[in-house]
Image (cartoon, one colour):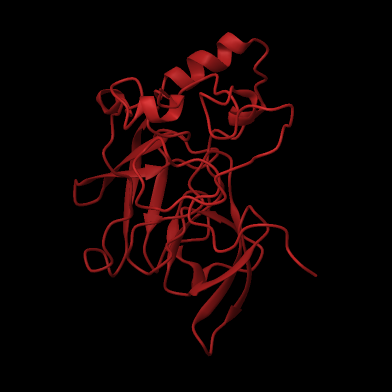
Length: 243
């Protein structure tokens, strides 16, 4: 009689695989609504917080109307610095304004995909995107992402001038395996993770044999339970591409 494979036995996962939300300090980081500050507003940075849920530090900003706002900190941002939000903001480090009002070649981050969504892309530490050009007639702006991909967004989408703080995070070498173990453990991620092709046939569908390639299954449906999802999950196509 067979037995369940390792990934199937883990299932949906218990506390070991769940994100430790009790360590997270800030629930959400987003821009204020456009309707609240249509004419623009300023604020002062009163604190910079290291949140376990994010790779970048978070700046706490006290606005002119005494509301507190959480923003992703830019490189060089300091406590006591004054930041501006809105159409009248200057193109300076840490200020938030529409990408249509930002000159070409400027570094930006925390960019809105749709105007008013609060910022969705380019939010990890050390990242930044570049304003390539503007199409004023169509109201579009061309943006180059950190992946070198160019996308087109509405010129009314907002972004922060500068680059995300904490850029040296990935430069620290993991000399010992235990360092990576505790790093992954901080977010309850399984480490080390063994490849399926390195397992025995009874432990994984890719295991067994003297080969190191992925065998069956060729594809796995999206609605299968956790543990079965190995190999090509709901692929558009499989196999060798014919020329």
